[in-house]
Length: 358
Length: 125
Image 1 (tube, rainbow over the protein chains, first blue to last red):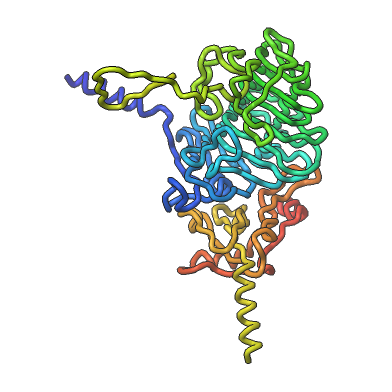
Image 2: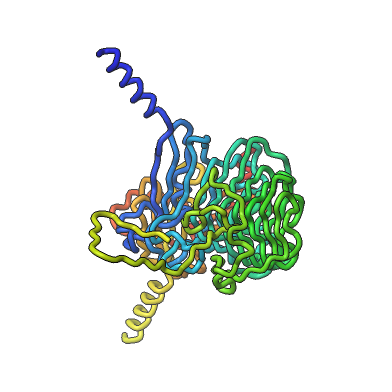
């Protein structure tokens, strides 16, 4: 009996020794929507600045952006002075009213709208293990190299950066080299991984702008680039691109040499990486591209059911819809808006949570 | 007399209409007094945007838009960040503000200090 008791105690200790959430902070506007009146911080930057620390051995740090936002967050975010590990990382995400619907125009959704860099990992220092999930970032500046997410010239170190379900856009003037995401390093890193899933990037349309400029080890899966000068630009041949749509970009939809593991990418021009399966000269409509709505519509058959199944890595699209086999390409999984017809006859009684799916 | 009252009222209204609030960090020695966020007057700050991490100052006579420049970083000629903030508040003012029991302390432009790259280099010598 004693042995069993000791065994159970040991099991309890072991289970609890695993990494768990260490720190939680919320970012919201007091009293807006579901935020209540007791927010920790009212800008993402004041949160990230105040909590700079060594997370090693402590667990991960959740930064939840929540509540309805009646205005934009207009302060550039600098992420540095954190020490992280694969288990002890930073997790920035939107939730509830603050979460976008796959467009930048949803009322109440959080938007980081800034002059200059959006979220910035300074050069010359190590980047953290971090996830950025579900943000709208709008760059309005006309300066050079001002990206929605900037991880350039970072120090050689092991880290994983997950960038998923974001809307990255540009609404500024002319400049040079601005993009939705850039990890131009100028050197070769070891041990780093950039996972870039389910993002929409658009509007980087001046000369030398690009939707995403990519170097190092990148998994670029199910993203949509639209209306940029260049869509996706591979600076290294280590960029594995799968299920991406790059459409209506004035210079090139895909630029550079991608990894030969790339597959199921689609372009409106003829630049889709010609590895495995690819689609070029495709024709898509989107729901309302002129107003930033890149949801697929029923007629977008060049994208619907044209992807490869990546369910071992993620299972939803940019706005949380479940991906179904065969997968669509791009950030959105098409879901029919037509209500299913359900005919019921006779005496039926339902109790509890009853749901009907088409 | 009426003119004086009118002038005082005008000045009061103007200062209220064109005021900004500055969120200033007190967290570490190296960035003590740095201006982190600029918001319009009357901003409802979060519960952690107060001592011991931060202190708020009111900057009268300047709009949020014009005060926004105090959020800038110090960058080198290549655009790389040298220091996360270029502007800070005089440390004595911060010391005073953090022990102030009620209300937001007003501050004027002459208490805002601009870092120069040279200063930083000198510090590292």
